[in-house]
Amino acid sequence: MELVSMLIRDHYGMEVKEARKMTIGAGSNTWMLRTERGQYILKNANINEANNPQNEPAFCEHLRQKGLPVSEFVRDLQGQFVWTHCGEVYHLQKFIEGNCPAWHSAPPWLLRESAQLLGRIHTALEDYTALPVGIGEGFFLHMTPQTALRSYRNTLRLAKRAGDKAIADDLNYRIELMKRLAIPPIEIRRLTCRNTHGDYFISNLICGESNINAVIDWTTACVHPVVWEILRSYVYAAPECGEGKINIVACVDYVREYQQFAALTTNDLQMMPWLFFYQIAVCDYYNQYYQSQAANREIYLKQAVLSTRLMQWFERNAEELSRTLCSLK
Image (cartoon, rainbow, N blue to C red; front, side):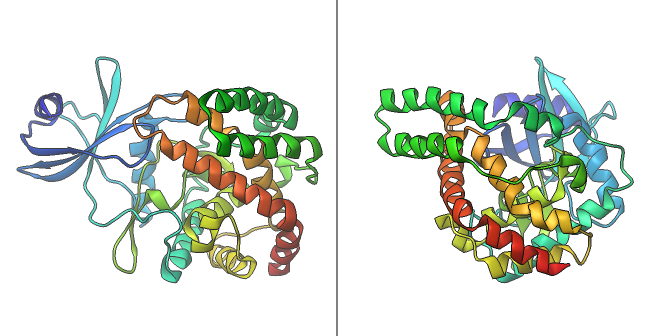
């Protein structure tokens, strides 16, 4: 509280009456502040290859000018949106009323509006300067079944050492899957890749009773294949996906809502489930859980377990989902 109060006083000339550290997410330190001028969010953001908080204010301003509900950042006394203290990066944004829904808790209206909003975001960013590449050709060069197999074997040793039998069982499934993984060739150049949020999913939506008030946390904004982000946003929001299952009809409806605001090619639709399946299959989220020093690192384990359940579903159903999605053209 003392450090936060000092930083806000020195950089914004405001007195903090109350500061509460928030616990959502695992990559940054974030505080909700109450001052004499109103409520704000102070974020101490990580900078790495994936996180670029210095780009966030201008990016959001571009979207705000196009009428999209995103974060509004506050300039400090020097006119800067992003500043440092002791080598740490900070920025301040206005507080937005509403709640962040839990994973797999989206009612029908939220699924519908989330899909539409993502389509609007992709369309609005077509004229924005190209962002760093997220899932691109480099991903497929480095993230292969062979490298995943080595990682899973190493993580399996950590799980056994820790006595984590359930995690060990999941890793054994992943190891066996890497030996038999059969996915159609993914040609990244044939997929629609656009500037996007980079981490668009239910936890980054601020919602009211029946509408989305804002999309937050744009530090990972990048260029992704849009179909990966569409399907990812669905599986973290739809209630049935909490059990690692996808309702194909409902998922196709979600994609149809997206298509009201942004176009997809036949190849996009065909490859959507295969791309998502491949990405979660070769990424070792369990190792991320074991290596993390974050206080709430359990979020990585939750993500890992969910992805394994989804892998089991995709192994049986990806072809059917792909075929059904192609009916949208």
